[in-house]
Amino acid sequence: QMTLPSGYVVRPLSRTDNQTRSNTSFLKTLEVLTTVGAITDEAFQERFQYLKEHSDKYFTIVIEDMNVPATTPRSATSSSPSLVTPGRGKIVAAGTVLVERKFIRQLGLVGHIEDIAVAADQQGKKLGLRIIETLKAIGQSQGCYKVILDCSEKNVPFYEKCGFERKGVEMGWYV
Ligand code: ACO
Figure 1 (tube, rainbow, N blue to C red):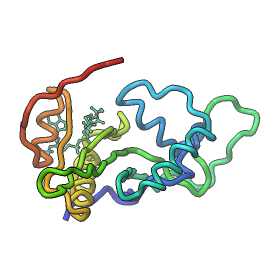
Figure 2 (figure 1 turned 30 degrees about the horizontal axis):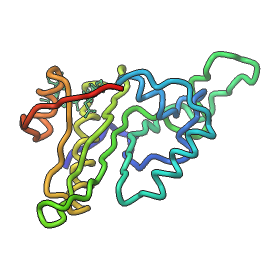
Figure 3 (figure 1 turned 90 degrees about the horizontal axis):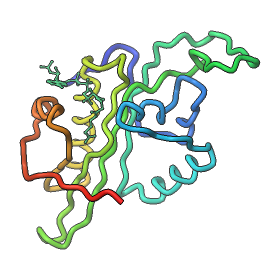
């Protein structure tokens, strides 16, 4: 029912999405949330492998803009990031739902939405809404009886538009 802009696709995170010096980087997209830090490709692959081995619990999706020029040459000597990688799109949004397995509610399942990020220059195009709708659908299809998330006050109107309602209070303990 909800359509993405032309040439945009929603898909699961892939092991090739860690191209930090290209336009495809998933990690760069996450920087709208907080500091991501330096992550080597080896470390990324190890984390990706873990998620893959727990694919009944971790569902990370991205939106990719396939409208980038496919043939722009990339200078091998340039130290600045190239604008495009031939044949690839650009990741512009991401999000995760984790499926928690409970004892209560007769071994109920709860979906936890985490790390919703839309690239700064792509906000306001309903990409965040599309990420949330996809994660809700995944949670529902996995059998969750509810899907919950924590957010800042300023994001409340966005999540209300996504069909969520205020519930409880978030608390944190930082090590
Ligand atoms: N205040 C009021 N309304 C808002 C706001 C806001 N701050 N943000 C979005 N909306 C509305 C939009 O106007 C739109 O309403 P409409 O359907 O009436 O036009 C609707 O919500 C959907 O908006 P989208 O275009 O899908 O929003 P966007 O793609 O910009 O994504 C997001 C929203 C994810 C909050 C994005 O701005 C972002 O990445 N922000 C920085 C990182 C962040 O805060 N992430 C969420 C952290 S919480 C978590 O991860 C669980």
